[in-house]
Image (cartoon, rainbow, N blue to C red; front, side):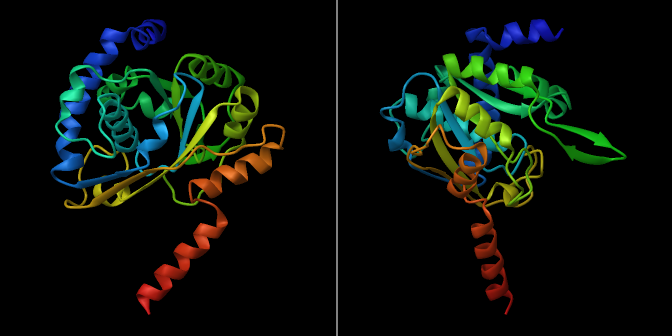
Length: 255
């Protein structure tokens, strides 16, 4: 069954159908029920067709990635920092994969369907006594991401969790050292307010959803994994510095 799923993921007509269905269902929640603000898509202009890694913070299981796919499709149709009318779903941008936890993508029929949109499932966590235990990327998962980068763009979330300011995982830095991709940092906000953890149900309507694509990072690929990871976490505003800033803002708002 898994081999059939992998074949379907790489069959472009299947991806286009999945994008069309998921796109139509999710579009109202992004631009009608809530408000989506996009910035930085001008950095896409000179990107190569492959070996581009989008590194982002994470707030929901699915809404984040679905929004990225909408934006990539809109940019393909010449739109800049906006979605507009979603006619772009008629011929979507499918040259992209996204990294997702294997456990998440097996959770429901919806997640299994969305996996056909290009999921690179990785065994990032395991559970012991009901608690999530962190671990690094499996070598086979690393090879899977490497193969995807050889052909497409890839979206990854180095924290591997929706918890804000969680530490990043060294596996992302190792992939960057090995493949030397163009790295685009992405900062998202508002999704945790608007949606539940899975990103499939509304929590609060009328929320401002923000997606900011920053310019490509200037990375020293010979630097240590620790240095590269620290650079990534700073770029996606999830480092200790930004955690302290967030704490101060909350304190000021309370007092």
